[in-house]
Every structure is written in C-alpha cells, then in structure tokens.
Image (cartoon, rainbow, N blue to C red; front, side):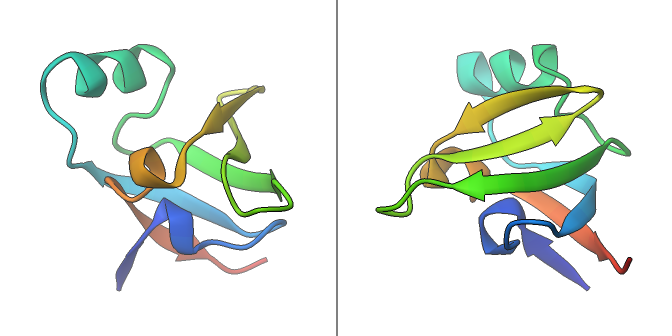
Length: 78
C-alpha cells in the first residue's frame, strides 16, 4: 500500500514508488535523488510541522509538506 512521504514519521523509512510532481519542480526533485526505487528516511520534522528533513542517497534535504505530498512511498518496516 502506497502512502505519501509526508505521512511518514521521524525514523520511518520508505521506498519511492512514484513522483507526482511535473515540470520544473519534478525535475528539481529528481535531480536531488528523489526517484523511483530510492530509499528515503524521515529524520525530523520542524516544530510547526513544516518543513521536514529526509535522508536520501546518503545526504539530507529539507522538503515542504506540499512537496512531500507528491512523493508516493511504500513503507519499509524496520
């Protein structure tokens, strides 16, 4: 079952199934390593809930919840 990246909690991991963003935003996210099959782990979420810090392909990046909502993942149980 697929969920969005924004639904994962800190410490949870997932494998990217699909990226729903198109155009410039979609290309920018793909350039950052958010592509199908990549493992992603939520490291922390800001106190007010936005943005969130994730680790993908060995580095960390910050995403807004709206951006994370367009990344479908399959949760990986630890």
